[in-house]
Length: 403
Image: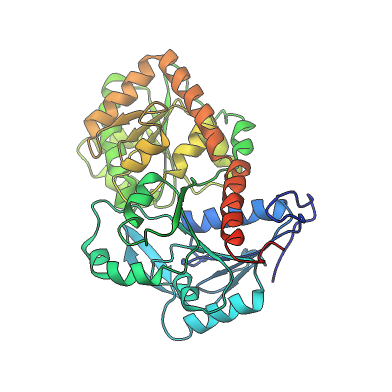
């Protein structure tokens, strides 16, 4: 099904006649489980439809009750470990035929593939003859560059040649893709987007709001996933409490029961656990209030991050940030101008940066304002304009495509 929003007229300037585009987006990962790429595609699709464009998304897996009607699935997927997490993909048997049939039936002006290097449905349209122009977004940032990709580098270099344009969500994602992407393909760094207005207008939640004696420090992420850095956050918290014994540590994400058990089993864990509050999974409105209520937000991820959407969200809420110095986080924070960075995996350094911010309200204010300014670069309205400019380049390269 192709959907179009009637809330706003088409006002894009991609076609000379102003007609809306028919955009087909292929997601490599199942929408049955949440993930950064799926969220990006969902929000980007909704932003396109608000502009009046027709959008359809194809993804692996089965349909769920809360899945938008404009998402179609192929009915099957399998899970593999990938970049420190689990990816639900579809590649074998009828996956290719299903994907290519969906592209043909969609009569799209342009097809937008996400992570086409991954062994999933977004890989499949690249062998089609007479297909619409194809643009790809590369999300993965894997450093150091893995041996497995070295083995497939020549194959990917040849397979990705049909792409018209390449988009990377960060410079670090480009550094990964540059290994296997043909040099002839135009490159554009366009970051992930956020609904910035929802964070700007959010109000603090009094339950989570800190005070000078009881500041609140927050973490958001999948607690059971090691690369999200929750153990670093816990160790840093134990050190912060030595200097700020009234501090509270608020945690958003699945896996709270197991995380609480792990804290309790530490030496002195019972006392430490009393300073933690596990909030579970929260909706988007509560997430915005969460960031808005904190004295400090901590992003202790240890690897596998291509962008860092949590940083952009916290920035939009004006929340001062302490983050590990991953390459992607360095990029998002403009080399650390918009956040306090600490050495990756170093809990003592993380705690030191947190304590510096807690001791200096003016520093928190400065970082909050810097992040707020930077968050404007990630607003979906800005991002959509940039992607539509890439679409126009891809379409203009085909004779008669814009007529």
